Image (cartoon, rainbow, N blue to C red; front, side, top):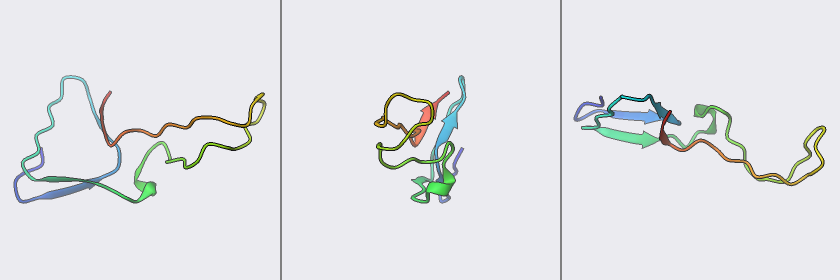
Length: 67
C-alpha cells in the first residue's frame, strides 16, 4: 500500500500472485538503471560467447508486473 500524500520511487516492481497493490499516493518509475534487476541492457548488437550469432534481442523487465 502506498498511502495518500506519499510518493514511492522504484525500479521494476514485482507483485506476487494473490497480492493487491493499493496506490492512494504516487508511484514513480525510477530513471536510474541501477534500480533495476536484472540490469537494464541497451542496444542489441554484441558478441555472444559460444553462440552462432552476433545479433540478439534483449528484453528488460517492465515497470510493474505480476510474478
